[in-house]
Amino acid sequence: MLVAALAVTLAGAAVAVGPFNSSPTVEAAPPPPGVQPAVQKWFKAREKSQIELNNALVPIVQKTIEQPGGSLAPCRRVAKAARVLSKMAAGPDSKVDQLSRAGLAKFEQAAAACLEGDLATAERLVAEGLAERTAAQEPLDETLDGD
Figure: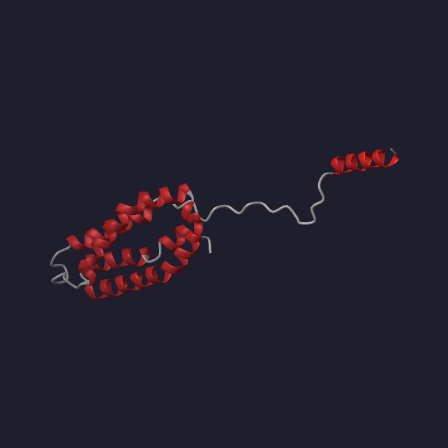
């Protein structure tokens, strides 16, 4: 009987104290940005503008603009496309936003040079902007994956 009373007393003490856990409480990490609905929505909102910028850059990259000042339409197209992306709201994840904007400033500068008739500078700036985007792609992918 004494053993039973002691067992009940110890069991009650264990319940009152709670389970013994030697490891600290670990909070769950937030999901990586690539699967967060707000980041996905932000990317979706940028999609058409990003495609338009890519398409607008083609004549400069392929050097199909005839002469400086000959046709300003391709230059205006790049200027508009880069401006639209630059003015879009910042992304919900600051690192994703920063990496997604790689090269935009160079594209805006390239458009300005193109509009002034300086195709050589426009071509150089577009190439630099594309290099910035390329350099940012792997870090962007890793950030989206949570690496």
